[in-house]
Length: 270
Length: 306
Image 1 (cartoon, each protein chain N blue to C red):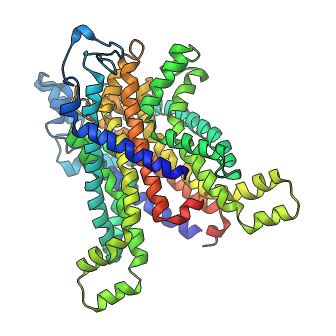
Image 2 (image 1 turned 90 degrees about the vertical axis):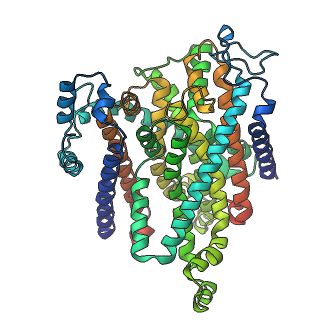
Image 3 (image 1 turned 60 degrees about the horizontal axis):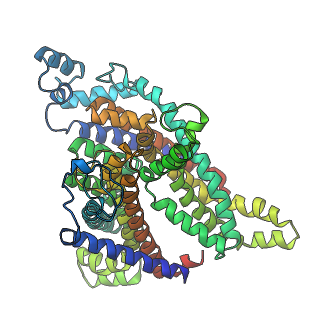
């Protein structure tokens, strides 16, 4: 029961932020890039709900536009890395042998970089921009999908219905994508939900480090980095973007947790 | 067991070789002339020539690659551009600070995770379990680059209890350690709970209870020890999270560790240094994973037999 409520809370938060991102140009009270240097670091007021930052820009408006970046990067990167990762995982698990060994060694090498390190290296090489952040996080992200799918494929491909499909002369491609894929999809969906949360944190981390979006872009991570410079005088600049990241990440984790319980009733008991 | 360890070492060498190769070609993919990037457009031609020669950039790429490999075998990662010091020396100057931070974070994480995990497992679905679940959800979701500033606001600015920024006394270590350790504590407490719950249903635990052992002894000696086996792996994997989380935490607190060294290298386009730092961090991570795997095999006699 308790967990069910968390799932609903998760959906409500995601939908609210999604609407905010979608409708940002119409509902944001100010231009997020507007400079008002005479109104620097003014705390929340009736005119500016969440206050103004070091440039006098409206923080609420910047948060709404930041949601666009976070959600777009989160969803797009997970879609791309998921597609790549699932395909490679299917191929690796289904064919086995040299192909599998080769692909798994590539995976081993990529897994030797802890967490964000490879993404930091990639963005350092490619240069900071939203597009390059997405490339870096996709390079980082496909591996976990591949490992998950490959493991599932290894057990499924021995089943009788796969053998039946083979003997009836169906192509490998058809067997992989029509017969195997639907049966590995539920853990993949769970993984994807958690990944969206992970990618959103990763994007903000890179932007916080100055390796993400270009300066001035209203990304939550970049806003936190600006907030850190003025932490003493204007804590409100730091509070709200962080709260936004936490809420969205929390929401995706709630949803992922709920999906996992639903797809795999065993985990609910433990 | 020896065959397993041998296989593990072979894989280790392959992975390290792959990592070095990947990082080398990645860094050398950077568009533009690295010498121009590093010295700026207005540097004298002679200076550029000298730097280019010193970095070996006037040689063909494959030669540079083999030189680099040869250097690594002799523990030579090259020379840092700005400080002119050997890169490995700079890394070793900074590494203790990072190790200190990670140890602090690990201690904080274990101190929070064990009580929380055990209490949750003993009274599953109770009020405490629910609370600890929420706390761990929060712990994972709070980005450490937000938690850090919040802690500074509360403990350094409002309450004026703890110092902020830079390294020094034990007090300096507290806030960065909490910042870095929270996510790990959250993850770990859930793992300990799940693992302990599973073990508590086993026959040997029932048996220990049936023969009248004190409940504390049942939990601590019979259940917890067995529940710890999967937790070892998680702790090992979490070191990777600490290693990359340390980069951000160091940036928040101006902590003079490897992370800030790497970031300074990136900001100042000191690419040999960036290359060295990335390799070093990956190397540490790979070694920790190896040790974790071996510890796992050692801790679980059932696996040891294989």
